[in-house]
Length: 220
Length: 299
Image (cartoon, rainbow over all chains, first blue to last red; front, side, top):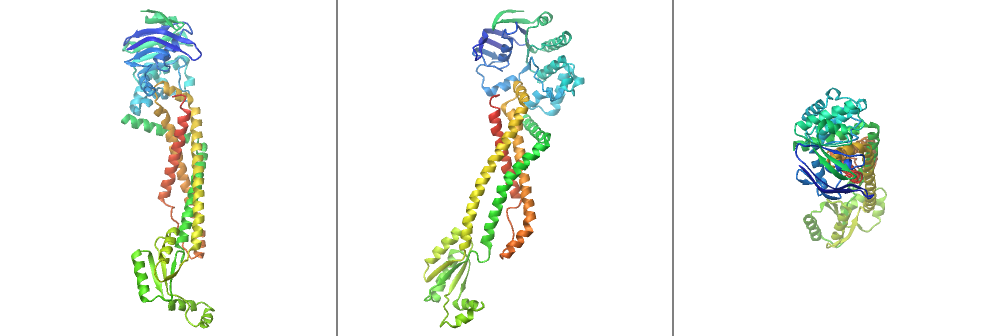
């Protein structure tokens, strides 16, 4: 499903964030990209989500080489991902359900169908009773669950999350963990970039350990 | 197809919501756009009507063909035949005796005429051309001059020609004014959309991250520009029609003093269609330019 070969990313300032990284991720796998802060996790997340282009090497997702993908094709590729960002990237001038409706608005799903799916997604993350809530009234954990609901509402085959438990308390983080486990159990390929060791012990995923932009090892 | 229509309906809805989101700003923009469209359009209508009034004024576009004193019946028949074949419009023959009788009707003239040994007036043809454009009338006059036994051709519409030159200058100035105001309209929309893009920078970034195409991002702004221009055009048409309504009776009086009748044209549904169409087009263009410039870096 995902194949990276000799993947490198150098930023204009000359910083090598990712160096000659190669790996394969199969359909339905649960993979955690771990490493200390600055190891290159977020850069790899951005490369996988086609937010950044690699400097050299290739990254093939569902048969498409992201390094050579036309700019106009990138939005359509991103629709096959569910993306959960470290800073959630929610719209605070809209209520909870409007945030979840956004991806379906982008693909042009009819309003009734979109609303049905949005409610189902909110239900999955335990926020159905907060669908009209102002985002400022949601806790950090609830906001992260809302971000997950938005990521999964279009039924992506790959769920990519970047540090989804940062700044969350233990209970909220455990809740997020359970949600991810549930999605993985229904066949979603789960790729999580995290520095949080509690994830690894609880979910027993395959681990890609990054250090200074290189993969030190792959476990699981 | 259904998804495509849903996306457009959604973008249109967003644009309408944006128009109502800040009513005062929208009203001010509509006043600016409406005025920018109304001024050149109203000036154009005034010029067109002036030109028609001038052309329709009694005796404004007559051509008199004065025959040589040697011209006989055969010469008159020849001119009549030529006029008929040329399909120039209405014409009539005025014999010298009839002309003399008319002249005698003017006070003081009979005494002068009595002192003359014979009728000094020539036979004449008075032509009222169908095509009253000054250049056409002038061409006709030149043609008539070359006809046999026609001694002198008099164009009774010199003042109309002069007026036409002024109108042409006026038209040129209106064209320049329209270009200037059209540009202003584009700039107004450009700036409105720029501010909207800045205000929605986060939303645009997030939408792009989760799969929005450039078309999806641009569409609501394009609809907004289109709608704002369209409503501005409607406002401009309303301004013009209102102005014409208020001035109508006064203009009627004025024109009547010059022997004409005030029957303005150009104040109809076609005007509304033209103004809304031009407004919508320029608004869309302003929006298109703005999204092209301001969304480029995030693409």
